[in-house]
Length: 292
Image (tube, rainbow, N blue to C red; front, side, top):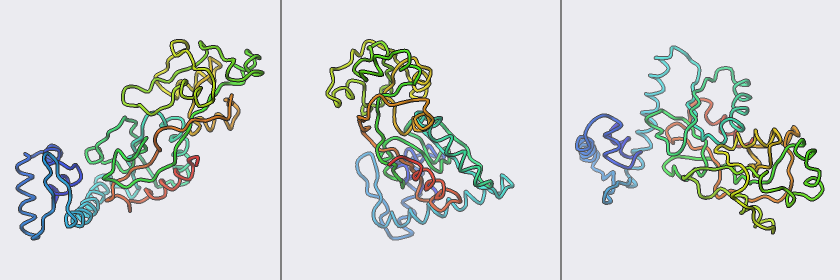
């Protein structure tokens, strides 16, 4: 059953073998014996990958839930504690500015919760690191798991009040008066192609495009927001991540025009862990806290 569950979850005999520490042929033999015992075909073999049959899905749901119960009971005995521990995985761009303060508030209201917070890029291996829930951009990367979406975030031009005090012409004329060298560009890296750039925003606003060769490049949105808060320049910031800075007045919007991101944010969690203590409560807390 362990070999079957790993193969079903990973979609590969090779990946299942790597996870368990045996050969792919051993995984295949285990599954063949299980199919013979049940009298059911559990997988469709599709070239280099496998997919669950209807019977296989029924067996997988039960097997995954059962193995999770065993895992939770074992972990509880090893930790000698009744406290619930969640392993939370999060992409870097929202970990510090958005997730951390909300997770801290939830923790204060639930003293029996302890957690491990992992900050990492996609994709992640839920099984290897025993991840209970992941906050990610575009949860459809993990179609084999359950997910709850936040809706799409959007970007808009943000700066500090101090920047406007030093640049009264920007206060009077708006974003069109911001010199190119004052624009802060967030470089998202080679894995992202759907994050709006300054040129996307200017085109959406019906303004002349920016000179993308001018201004400063920052490889992290949280740091770019720090620079904007310090008055260095104007950042194309995400509304969801900058919400506390906007509410406190440390950042102000130079325009109400927003450009939506290409995908939704969401929380992804394994089907077998949906009944784990505090998981549903944390998911509800975070989704309700996200801007709609």
